[in-house]
Structure formats: C-alpha cells, structure tokens
Length: 136
Figure 1 (cartoon, rainbow, N blue to C red):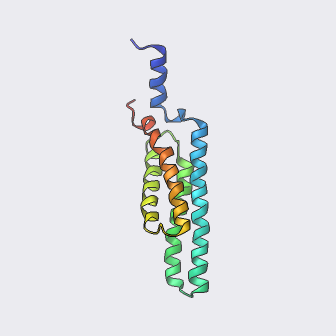
Figure 2: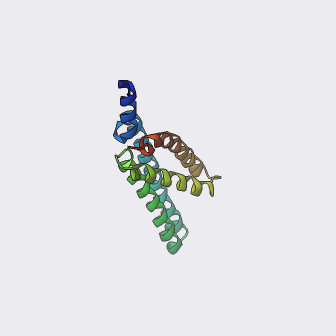
Figure 3: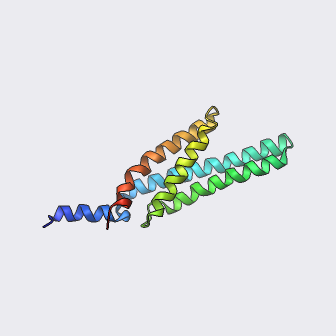
C-alpha cells in the first residue's frame, strides 16, 4: 500500500505539466533569447556577405541555415514543457545539435556566447527527463 506522499511524488513524475512554472518560463526565455540572437546574426551575416562583399549566393544559403536555426529555437521555446514526450525530446535534440555546430566556430565571440547559452539550456532541460521518461 502506497503512502499519500509516495502517490503524490509518483503522480508528479508522470505529469510533465507539473514542471515548476519558474523553470519552464526561464528555460523558454533562454530559448527565445537564443532565437533572437540567431535571427540578429542572420541579418548581420547577410549584410556582411551580400552587401559589403557582394557574395549573394553564399549569403542566401548561409542566411537560410541561420534563420532555420532561429526558427527551431523559437519553436523549442513554444513547445517546451508540454505534456507529450516530443516536447522534451525536440528541444533537447535542437540544443545538442546547436552546441555541436557552434563548437565548429567557437573562436568567434558570438559563437562562444551562444555555446554558453546552449550549455545553460542543456543543464536546464536534461534534469526534466524524469518527468517524461517515467512509466504511467
């Protein structure tokens, strides 16, 4: 027979919506910050490559990839903390991929700063796996 506190703890583990609202909102804020930084960086890259260096084809391609990353981060901020398992896995995969890609160019200050934000996001998202991986 389960005690009352054991039932309460078990039901909290099985319900992802029981994630602390402060944790959820703080994590979402970091996703939105990351998306905003990537969007601004995309505008800068396009201006630098297309306008200043007259390299429009490469600028278009690079800017598309940067904007896709910004959109992915924004979507992560929207779906994070939802009741489905994919609302945990999607942000986790996006953060890990973004960390790996920023490591390729870590010598620039922007990428170092974004990597630190991604690291913070990873530390915030990983501990929540128990809310999504526990058996119903």
